[in-house]
Image (cartoon, rainbow, N blue to C red):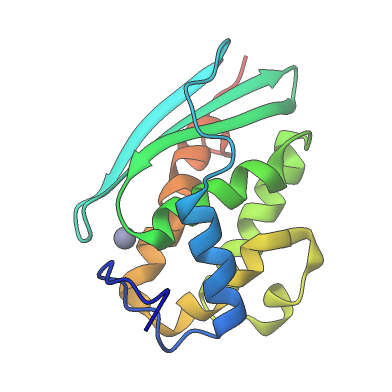
Length: 156
Ligand code: ZN
């Protein structure tokens, strides 16, 4: 069967279209680091799956000028980071945190959140809601964002 390489993924029950979007981001990640002039960086890992994400932001005031990442791990973790960079670029921190909230609600099965076009390609990850153990993979890059610029983080 051409095109059916074995990469250890367990995505067979996700919708095919979404699977293609996820694998495309996984194989050809957008916004892959390093990022010159990064103002914020943080590395987190997900020991349950072995995922590692090193997130790099370049902020200009309260605007996110660039989001880059480096990392390794499963397709869900890496695709989520790749999609994140495209969706958050040029948003304000407040707007980005709203996207994070919508994305998190989608991963917990909220169908209104899953229909929000602000999520862009991230909506391809909606099926992850059916696999609770993979939700941590999808949120890894976002946990970096939350720790770097989230509401709990003091900003000068
Ligand atoms: Zn993972």
